[in-house]
Length: 479
Image (cartoon, rainbow, N blue to C red; front, side):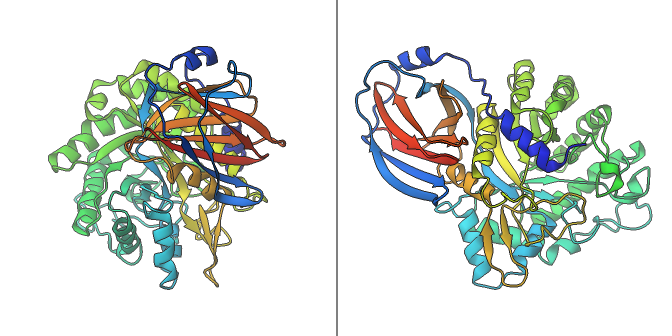
């Protein structure tokens, strides 16, 4: 069984393959609808010597000759999906680590992460009860069976989770929150434990009511949850090593179509439901679930993880259900990886593959953990987007953080992914048109040697040299 680290490395490698239709030559000839840009192009670079540093600007000029094997052609006339945003998981562990930072350091880090003028993280995942990244195993209704949910309480979350969520929303009022349960309370399950097992069918309605109570309780605390998934990673019980719940396809169909969706509607809530919340290799299950009319009346959204399969498999679902919305909801670094601080190219390639294959958001795993990748019930050795030392509170920024910077700092909510084509070997690329009429092109060279790349936009061109193991984001405005 591969580790999460191996899964992520495989996903990053597969992201090199992109599937936006069209050929380089035809893309280069589609210039009629391309707006004339302002002459200057801002450039931001991450490589061995600098991290998201502003480099010397480039300028557009007339191209010399036909496109070559080192040309990337950007075609804004061919549009794909809109972008919701970028972010990470504010797990119990992440919120605890952040809460332990003294002021003003905590406020400065939250501002760095969530301010639109800084990293601009705008989509975060939260846990409904305990996950593997919690200080302890807990639910909101512990003890003996309680079908009426008379003991329901979110008191646990009031200590440090809700304060951190409110602080993040204060920095970024547009913060979108996705809630995911790792397990129902143990008494609802066939093994009477939150570790592994599966939900007893007789408690489906009770469990739907439990989720509604969570949404209402959070709303009463001033924290609206915008969407939920029925279950984190539906296709595994994690061998009972952590909070988990096997949720078969037919159970998820019944639960969403007959229980959870109607319960949310009856409560008058606007919370959306995103299905699956698991790996690309489950694309067939996603199609079948959307085929069900009761489910498709409730939702047409799928949440994806990248630990198994490759992102182009998402296109199979889009082909069967063109109105489906795709979201990427989990993936993070390994704290034991020697390249934890420097694997920015791997993550930029991964993010590029996600956007080029139709997904609307990118949510990393834990926003913050300590220097040992804790708190962690286990069993996976993950690291945070940032590491906060438990003693000194020093902040270290991961390679994933620097990969994120080239996307979240330049791609606005409501941006649209646009076509980019290239034959350049080893160069990954994705382009967007932002709502403010600006454009962003993210280029990744994960190779061991520098490459000189030509960029074409309409009737104009420019050149940029990409160092080995580097990312460059180019920004320009329409005239």
